[in-house]
Length: 129
Image 1 (cartoon, rainbow, N blue to C red):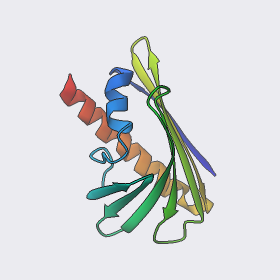
Image 2 (cartoon, rainbow, N blue to C red):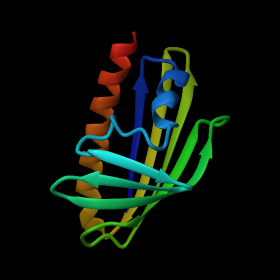
Image 3 (tube, rainbow, N blue to C red):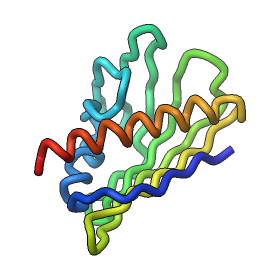
Image 4 (cartoon, rainbow, N blue to C red):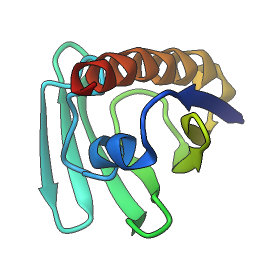
């Protein structure tokens, strides 16, 4: 199942990528208390939800693209792969964020989490203006 977000930000692509393109930066992810990055694996601590490990599959500053997959998580997750792309526009930038996840029952949780991230990103970018 795929969850897709296409969101316009009124900030530069470089400003948004400075946040999203830093794999161990997690202040934009609600609920994440801590992150460790070792090689291409980041470990996230979510109090009350458990620990998650994600593998960075692609990180391109030139294309402002990040792809990652959850490789360890509590609960029924069977597969997860996500792609983030930041695209400059005339009024700022667009964030294209696609996540494929199984089982389908996790789609609502994933979408809600992604939407919470958008709110936090807007807040962080607003403080930079």
